[in-house]
Image (cartoon, rainbow, N blue to C red; front, side):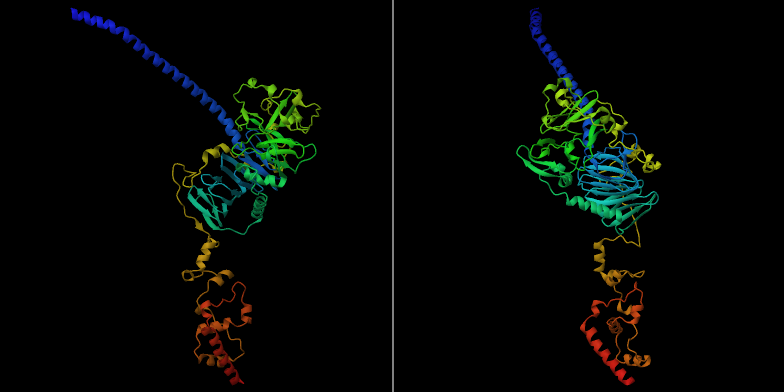
Length: 623
């Protein structure tokens, strides 16, 4: 009984201690669940924000990868925003899905961010399939393309055609010709490219041309003489290289555009910002930045498209400021802070007018995306929290710095000037971000004008579906991967060599000339250069008749007595001056040159003296 009571008492004593312990465990679990819920909530918010902001940032970065750097004629472009073929303009950025048509008497040059160039001749159609930092993929529907690729390892320039996919992984120059009918020609001028068809993989080296047709047809030959199209491209490359000196004033990311600064302005040192660039071309009285061009609706934002030849980098990188002794100056971005932007300006708009002013160095740009350290992404920011009254732009006080246009001019591109005496930035409320003006069809046109019907793209070009091409042709950066069968490794396929144009490099030809013993017998009359390099054996050459007017029977008897070797007779006849027999031979088969081993004193000088003595004796006998 006493033991039972002790046990009960012990239970009573232990019960108060056990209850707080369970409560502590429960409270700990509750706090852990609460922390987990908050963490999950923050993760979801961050993920959703990232997914919403990523497309904006990606679109902004894609717009800075390619642009029109040269245009001649009625070059046209079709974008997702235009929905139709419209005139193209210099300095217009290119995006994935854009299509280009170059009509007759037209030329187009496209510059990439890494310094690569793509040029299209007349009657050429091209589609931009993929842009990935320093890798580019295009599709050539028809026409002629010249490509200079300045990329490096881990990058690729991929040019797809109907029967092939051409990939350049190293610095190279090559041409791709796609006629309306016939095989596709890939010509490599420098470097090498990898060409893949549905039959397999082929390597094309410098100096070679590969012809590909539908099916298994493939043929390799040497390059033909340069035509007018190739010579123009070489001259264009040389011109760009000569005016592209290495500038220490530009960040490394902008060095490929240094030629634009070299020919169109000068670098000046200032005490406030160091070296700045001031334009000297396309600048008139009353000129100001962001005035000679228009705002074009591209990818969900208004992007400045300048009509000035140098108007790519100064309007999409850096800032502008006005120096009293110099004028307008462009300040390059700091090294490591190079970000492409649609146009670094401040905005003011009313019901019937739109105005903008260029931003000065270190002034904040309010845009839809991230554009560097001095920018604010207003995509998911409450604009009312920004103190608009405190936003003051330095260039507002500069005379004629503010550009003001009518609402219709901004949207439709009509050449109407809005004469405003007062400065709208001093009388109106500064707007944060681009003006919320709904774009129209003309808002997406870089140049508002009509194109002649004869210059419009043909129906086969219009029917090309870019989405289907992107699904059928993925971008492949590896040399060992396949475009036509991504799940398989491509195999090397044999290529038929054109016998009339043997595909040999200069090094191979030199090696062959150094090894005459291994030469095959010629199957056809050789060219003059080949006959000089490849001599047949002396015994195979027919001896020419003697030049002296001697009777045949006497000459034959006398010349047989000393038993002169055939090679000596041959050597003697080769040293005679040009006789009538040699002059009557056709120019395609000139007399063969005496081999070097037969030009020794024993076989040359002694033999000549002996023959001359015999001829003199025969001549005296005849008299």
